[in-house]
Image 1 (cartoon, rainbow, N blue to C red):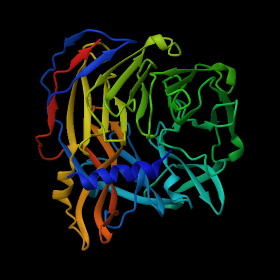
Image 2: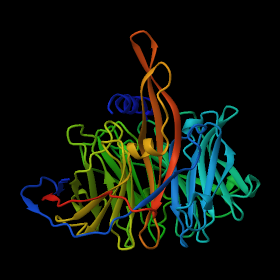
Image 3: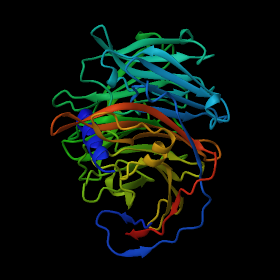
Length: 467
């Protein structure tokens, strides 16, 4: 979508601009208020560090973090030169335990590559990205089965789907493995009168392009893009996107024989939604296969977090409920990620209105009209300034770090969070008398995980619930 506009808007504000929370539950038109009590909670502390030196990195947009079944952390990110795979087997709050390897060259349209990661049952990484090489544009799939941070030669890849320059992904959730470790991806179908998406799958031998096949799914009255794909434990796909023609989130699902387009259904949810960002929503499914969604509605005057759920017949709008939790995000730059803990409770990583990185969790009654949420600050711009100060350059009048957001969140078996997110340093500089421009002089991917020295970073709220 409009990435350049969004980045410029965010950086202008950050360069120029140096608790009580309300939660409101709704089903259709809510009315009435009740007070919800928040229990005492234990502080989560975070260790944070750069995955690349910010003065040499040109990291783009999203990263993707996954904690595996034995507590190891896998991460992909990209810059103007390479797609990187990073791995830590244990004690991942220590940067010395991380290995980072450039595994593939970035494409000619490098900012659009959006590499995304999944792990098979043996914790082996599977990777997909979009790239243009020598004028040819494809989605690429890659596998590595051993020693994946030792050498790029241990990775194998194949071009899966060819397309034009405007078929790029707009978030990192377009690719996933099902419960049988079969890879799938989705991308929008923008052909007039056939609006919907392409569901691309492989059953075996997935390093052979001929083993991939495509199902064309239509979504009547909806033109979804920014597509996200998740599977339940029975390998049933659930897809979420944004349909700007109807100002709704577009939800689609299939429960059997999903290579047959007629077995898919779709529905529009939560109107009106008016995004200027590709990163303002995320979906997961719980152990019972029921979808959970965190999202923003794009309302500048009430730009707060929503949490939504459905427990039956998900293609019926009346079977969805939601409430708002007053955690405002970055102005004009909504970004979040959602994870579910071992009890199915939501946890959200989000960029705040103060340009900080925040971690919000629901601790009780999460799918009711009386939820309890708490918020903890993972990192502030002041934290970054203290750790890695960059002086104002000659000819400039101000400089600041920005936690620009785009978080990727994953929980380990004990519900401890790990996340990656992008940070940018900008300077406001005079290019000729009386005229100023914003210069980005450092950018990198930060990694944060539970652990390290105690921090006074927890805020527990007594939500005001509207139902």
